[in-house]
Image (cartoon, helix red, strand yellow):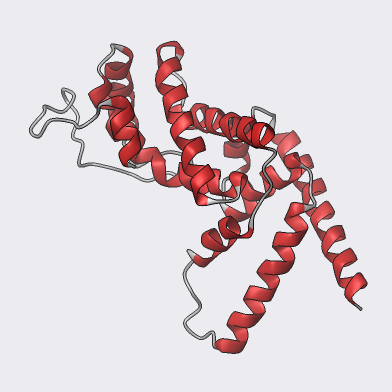
Length: 223
């Protein structure tokens, strides 16, 4: 994401020393986080809080893939999603000084991203468009045994789901994207949305029911 590097004047110098006592090549992947070890991430954030923007680049790189997927699901097309993600990273940098390093960074960042997406949707009166869901679903591993007929069926199913999603409320659409498309866990969704896990379960239940009702109504209208 070259624009982010322009915004922050990034570009960690080659050979720049890693934070003391940490080995950057040791990485783990978590569903909600990036690809940085927690201790390394915390040290990078501490450096950022001291005003050194060079150390924000690894944070951006770690959270960009998942962040873009979430933004795509909420915004509806790649261009708007990238704009929202860049705005979220800018907002994150601007408010990073207030972040408590004892907390997990991932949920905090995704809260910011979610708010940026929702603000953008309100300002632009944007609606979901088909490209985002298609891009996300097509990125999943293909069934090696699927033939042309199976692919047509899947495409038709995506069309039905897409049209149904467009008719849902923002809250229902949002939680379905996070759970069913992006695959976040209940606790992670709770952190992103800033609601209790019990509320996540309840909202997801109602969102699924609303989606099913829309799909049934559409199918009934076609018969």
